[in-house]
Length: 103
Image (cartoon, rainbow, N blue to C red; front, top):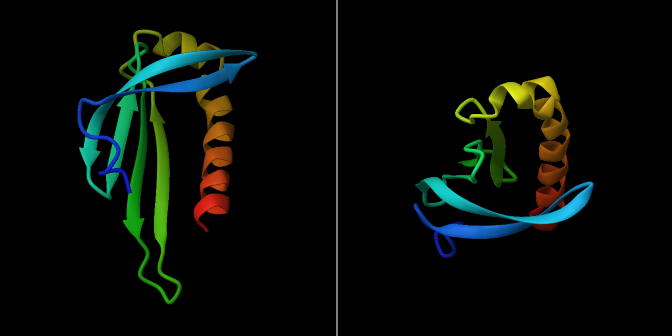
């Protein structure tokens, strides 16, 4: 899924919106073709998708998205504004969009 597009060390930009629109450049920091990709930007928080084949009659893939801000110099500030709780909502929304697109 990912191997044709990105690899370890590659950079990509994403349009974002928290109140106002902005653009951020990310770097791929973990990569295992068809199994895992993780990236971070200047804040050093890591977003990760892990893919796991599902062995049932329907087949498919289990996608786990995680967000780890422990390595960020702004980790304490993120905790104070409850960033991880708000981000959990965004993660659920992203996973719903993936199911709608690929499901």
